[in-house]
Image (cartoon, rainbow over all chains, first blue to last red; front, top):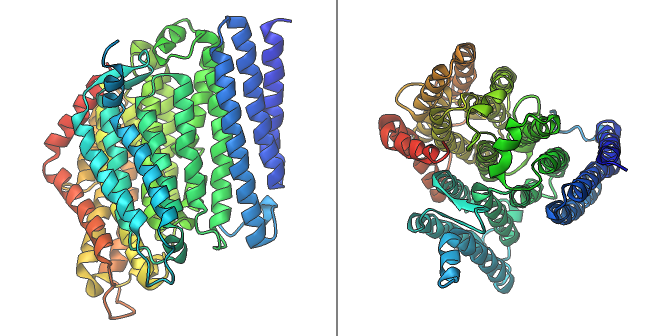
Length: 99
Length: 481
């Protein structure tokens, strides 16, 4: 399989994630969308690393995974905090602040 | 290699000291007894942070330029300038929050200052990063504590909501940034920033896609149009001294990243970005200024006016020249003093009136003439009236843009400066012309007053003697070309 196949796969996953972020009303769903976007990045990086022929991309991937995990931990903590205060995690109900 | 450890420590002195300070604050907070009650608070963590930040600020004058780890980490004029800016802004913010009476600040001061220092560490590393992985990790080290600090008042009804909105926008934009970086890596076959110009010159479509994604992601971080919607909500809900910092330091960090990736060493190839950045700058100025007009909450008003100021800085960036970058850096310093000062006055008024509305400023000139005068100076500086810092900042940015032939953009910016004056003067009218609803003066805690005074001195000083500041900015930018 060529590089393009991997890049296309990553682009599809990234777009699904982006669509999830835009369209989901549940904040947990939005978080899942962001995870998908970041995983698309990992596919991209590893594929490039394989075809460029150095390990820089894989090192980058390790860092991206670490950052993704810490972001997910903080994001879920904020969602739990929000649920305790407001008893809802639906984006439509979070309207005390008018954007 | 003799003396390598010494060399390492010499160049990394601010970062190493900052890590030490963060650990010290955390440990001191853990072993000191938690204070009981609002009156018995001893803000030891805050004082340690403040003194430590001043010491690190002083240390930056004892390090010389150089580079480490095969030019991955560089200390050039721009890095030094940015580090001093971040440290000064953080020290001012801590000074403004030392007397914060809100319960969580007395109870959890350690956490607050630790998170702030860690975020600051990310900024300091970011200022020196010349490698994509380091740049991204530093960016995230800066961003993640900011989400936490936004939601710091966790029992508050709106703070968690603002934190969540900021978090979702921030992580989505990080994902876009790192997606762009993955393409850049793929085309370059490496992660050093210095190979960007060569890859850009090849005109590979994936490289252009990567750089465009990166620009969009960084646009979110600096709150440029159309990615600015998170700013007003976040500013409104978070604690004001923190917002004063949030409105300056992370934006400055975003601009430093933009300079490193899009201008440094790129040469004439950089002109590809001129139309895109010009449109972005123009739209940001228009949106920020027009959206600020109907705001009744001064924090939201300052948030939208901050969006407009990001647009003016983007004008300097769009010039893509040495003078453009230098004047953008000058603008950042002027914006830091003016904007942080205005937020500190908002904090002082909010503590006494329990409100951020424009109504709370009625007759402030009769109640507290000095506070009203300080606010007037900050507003005039933000509006760009002569003899305060903001005037020179706007003038210099416009001059740099004219040099690069961006006449339309300068005209648009100049027209909207008048619009901006309208809403700044709405607040001034409330302070000076409207009759006060209450007689007694607004109490200003001494330390908050000191922070306001420093900002006012900075604004007036830069307005009367802009020369030395301009020289510093030009020297910082000269290393890039």
